[in-house]
Length: 450
Image (cartoon, rainbow, N blue to C red):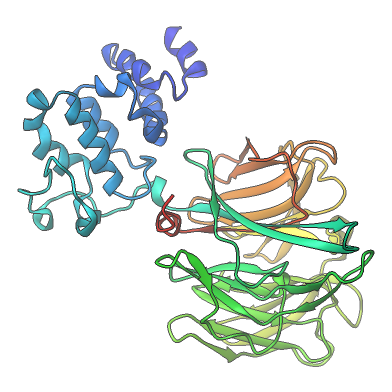
């Protein structure tokens, strides 16, 4: 009964003491739960008395955890350093055993390690048996680019403002991030071979108070961790494109303009830094404005309305054969997929949420393997979606939205394995006009110095 009660009330403030309780009474299920919560929240616990007083076995078990919430493996060394300093006389002889068992030595950046304990000085990490696998907590964070537009009565113009933040789901923290150098709205953020790019978008002229004109851009920026800013030293696209016309697949970035008089498609190879034309659909096999493209199940799908018939459906591009397949209508789903949607894929599913109206009690997803749309129960409490990003490695969705038009913004995380939603807080009461979000490598955030 005590164990069942603890499972309902354990959190980051009491997980270490409850883990000791579970160990004393040999409750392995409760201990695993407490260890996981402790591991995920390790950076919050390292300065507490509960952590300083842990036994060597408990510290070893905790620092060996696959879900340890650290940004890089050097952080584990710092945590171990603090534990030893609390009672250096009696704990120093545990250094070698702890380092080889709890720290993944091949992942340590030795050029930046200046530990006063010289923990690694006598260790041959190349011959150690420690794991080379990265911690789950190191895998990725959510990068959110926000845009807002406000009317200035004094200048009779619109003032445009943009910014960026990163969200760490493990520590539930938000951190500021450098804004793009080229001011624009609706860029696409994509990652290729660990490098993050911002592609295309729209340039906005705010000379008129009650309306604005926008033109697509072809500019491409990449994030430089050493300079801690975005730079535009990457080749521009041959055709200006905005958010819904760009997709990343297999570490390559595709630009696809399918709703114009002359369809154009090209692919960016980050290893050569060049754009190369690829096949595009000919004749009337083009889509109207409002389409979007996404990659899943080994192909790229363009979803929208066919230009000639007006029917709703999808077209398929096969990268391996460099060819487009015929348009396949799915009219029965058109009323649930309005022209403007947020979308993201995990596994073989593409999830689609409308940006206007209400999400209701249903979610729409596109099955890339069988190429058909389906409806499913949606337990997300947020009723309005403004941004969506997928984390395929962790099978997670990040949904930015609010419960209603008047509610404060929130962030909802969807666990594709457990098929459940978890709502988190948004860092501000202000709700930007637009979002662009993507899951990026955590080391990119580390290199910014946060």
